[in-house]
Image (cartoon, rainbow, N blue to C red; front, side, top):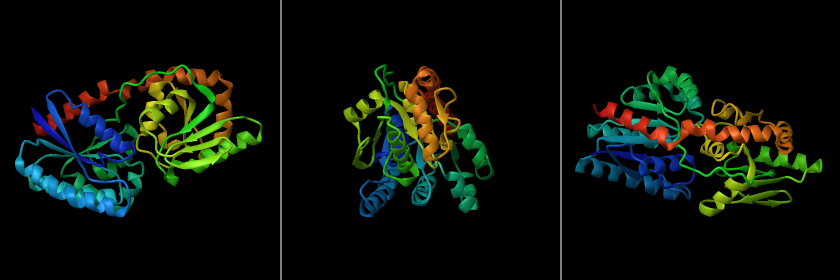
Length: 321
């Protein structure tokens, strides 16, 4: 069997790490998959240690042979800078490289570093998450493939509380936590007894609960019981929280950063606390909510592992041939 080596933040929190682990655990037919971590949570020192380690490990692994493709996963800024070095290591070993672009502000990155992006991406095969991203990045990428993030099999819950809202994401202002919190305060000031659940941050005030980072059973409880997912992000590649919520039958209120991810299972809202509070109030009423909830699992089929993994298998086979 052939082997694909995934290189990226495979052991860190967040959507990119979750995607890498899913792909490595569900290799296409005829392929083995390995992972190599290029990043670490915990600050500058762990990040630097991971970077120093992965450069040596990648060179050693490729020298041992039996790696047919190096599949590198990148965001922007320092992630991109680190991945440039790893691309060079793989290419010096004459191993084909596939580069997955995960960042939701990669267009901004290209506007700043377009010639460099074009030069590097012209030497390998680039994959983007949506048709929209393919069109937006085409001036810098030339050719690319579109393969979305995958969603694992998840249960569809029928025991949701429409007064409970959820924002899943790491602690980062671009995720829009402040917008969701202010929208919740607006509703509560109007006498609406809503509750906002936040992950990635710790917070405690009436109607707003910051759970910190959650996973396992704690995550399942939130995903199965909350009524609506909020995603007021400034940018997203293809939010794992959004597409997993769709698959679970949880409607989505999202910013334009998620435009194109859904049609009937959510709504695109201006990144404004008043606009989000008005949309949240409509979700409480139930009529529109029920239609969105029913549409979610159907629309999310295109993101299922059973649909996405064969797409990767087809591309891997084309690249090695």
